[in-house]
Image 1 (cartoon, rainbow, N blue to C red):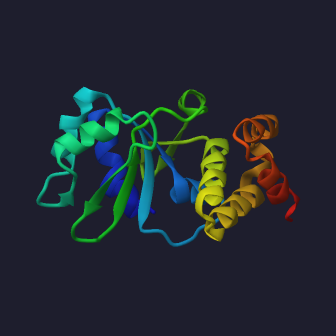
Image 2 (spheres, one colour; image 1 turned 30 degrees about the vertical axis):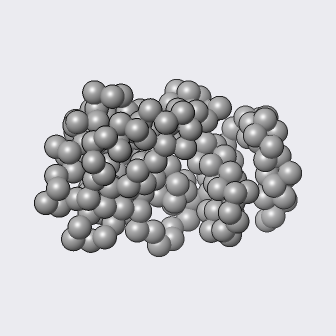
Image 3 (spheres, rainbow, N blue to C red; image 1 turned 90 degrees about the horizontal axis):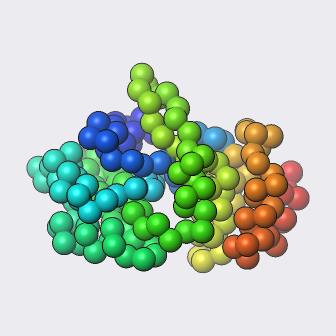
Length: 185
């Protein structure tokens, strides 16, 4: 996990691009460890930030899509996405710059600054990670998402905002699966 932080998160943090770690790295932080070779990053990417990315992810060390693709993904009203890949290790960052999720603003207001390996990093709130994992499960299955949620619940579930999860899963049409996940011990 620390390699992913060093390769992808620290550079964004250093140049002041707002981000929050989500996906499997966040579920491991709030839950149980598992293998992953990528980090999901929700980006608060402004048009002016796009040019900065090639400075922190230089072509000799990283694959970064061309700037016009980055601009297109940054402007996409929903599901904007691009990858950054580290050549030497094959590790990857899945970057999500779209702002269309109904709880996107809530997540930014509630993101968490945590210290890892001597520096601060920003994590999406665990409730937001759970919402996305439930959405990904609904879209394509993948028991890893449900296992990640179970691990998060077993390690730090008592700290989750249960009222928020009940209400937001209802709004997103995820209440049925959330109830099933909660019933599993």
